[in-house]
Image (cartoon, rainbow, N blue to C red; front, side):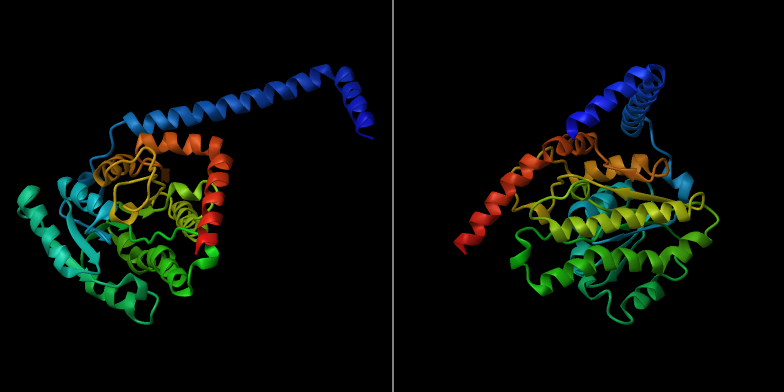
Length: 315
C-alpha cells in the first residue's frame, strides 16, 4: 500500500515538474521570509531606541504597578521613576512600599509622587475588592498599567493542593483581568496614549513538565494581552511580556537558571519596546532562550519527568 502511494507520488512529480518546482520555490520563499522577519524583529527590538515615554504617555502622569516591592515589579517601578513617571504601588505590604518609596526619592527623584494601595491579590476575586481599588484611583491620571503580580507553582500536579491552585489562578489570571477591566476606561478616556504591560512568561511557549498550572496561567496572560491589543489597536499600546529567568525572590530556590538577568534589565528592555510591538521576550538573552528551548524541549521534559517521578516515590 505504502509502495503504491510512493510510486504514484513519483509519477505525479515526473509529470508536473514545473508545478512542483513552483510549489517548492514558494515554500522556500515563505520559510526564508519568516526567518528574515524574525531576525529583523529581533534586531529592531534590541537595537532601535525606544520612545520617549513621558512624551508619548504624558508628563506628570502615573504608572500603576502591581506587586512592585520585589522582583520584576520593583524593576519596573525603578525604571519608570527614572523616566519621569509618578507611581501607584498596588501591593500587599504597605511598610515595604514606604521603604521602596523612600529609596526612589533618595536615589532617583525627590519630587516624585507615590501612592500606595494595599491589596491581597489572593482575594481580588472576592466581591467588592476590585471596586474598592478602582474607587481609590478615580481621578488620577494613570497612563501605564503594569500587571506584574504572579505566583510560581512548580512540581508534580498531583501533589499540588486546592488552595495553592486557587491562589495561583487568582494572582496570575484574576488579578490581571480584573485590574485591566477596572482601569481600562480611565486609560481610554485620556487625551494622550496609554499603555498596558502584562507579564506572561517564556514558559507559555512550550508545555513544560512540572509547570502545568503556571504555564497554563501564563498562556492566559499572553492570549489575553494580544487579543486586547487587537481590540484596542490604535487606542492603547498593549504589550505581552514573556521573560525567561529573572533574579527575583520567587525563583530563589530554583537551580540551573539559564541566561538569568536582573529585574531592572528586564524592565528596561521591555520599556524600550513599548509601543512598537504587542509581544516581546524583553532581553535578547531571553529571545535566544526561547529559540533554543524549542529545539531541546523534549530533552528537558524527559529529564524533569524523571526527577519528578523519583521525588514522588521518595515522599
